[in-house]
Amino acid sequence: MVRELVVLGTSSQVPTRQRNHNGYLLRWDGEGILFDPGEGTQRQMLYAGVSASGLTRLCLSHFHGDHCLGVPGVIARLSLDGVHKPVEAYFPASGREYFDRLRYASVFRDITDVRAHPVSDDGRIASGTFGELHAHRLDHSVEAFGYRLVEPDGRRFDTAALERFGVSGTAVGDLERDGVLTMDGRTVRLDDVTVPRRGQKFAFVMDTRLCDAVYALADGADLLVIEATFVDEDAQLATDYGHLTARQAATVAAECGVRRLVLTHFSQRYPDTERHRAQAAEVYSGDLVIAEDLLRVAVPRREV
Image (cartoon, rainbow, N blue to C red; front, side, top):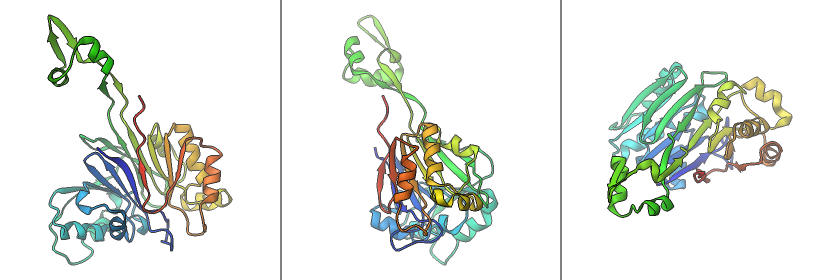
């Protein structure tokens, strides 16, 4: 199964010649979760080689245009491609009017089953075989939420233990299903031949000032996607307009034990992202990724 982030766009307020508006597709086993599709997302999906038919969930952090103007095109494409399966949509409850406008922004043969889930409080908003999806309120100029996907901890088979207990072939499946197995007069329990497996965590943090929610979202994340709109020299602008600097985002990642950090949502005022990288690297020693349009970023392999 695939677990990766497909970066569809990385610019903030306006697209540039090099960067499209925001857009991030998380492929997580059988889930396709689209975060903050800005203007041009449908075309970026074509360039990235990902299909709208794979979408299962839509998560909007807030209703500024660079985070939602791609919604009409994506929904129209779902109808055009004949996608009938449900797409669960999560967004700040105060923006329900804006979501409805985006959902029905043009005339088209609408066959999609988009199910709206307005978010008004912190906590779990969805669960399933993928794990749990949580939302936390951020500190921006309009109501905004960040999202966190958490896979529950589990167990995996220990090959050496299986050999030691003489469990092989179809007996392995029987033990996994029933939790206990009797062989040659001896009882083997699942815990005897398995070891703990830490569940993976993904976090998505867009427009916000530093606040407790940023840390709650990022805590222990295997992959953190976080805005880094400004650099140190423009830190006051970040505070004034409800954003983070690259250093702030990287400091959060360092303090929260993030394994792989993806910085994105760069202001058009910067011709390149070298200062973002340099300032982030001063405080974060982990795997640092400066997002580029159409980049694919794997969720790090599990820690044993």
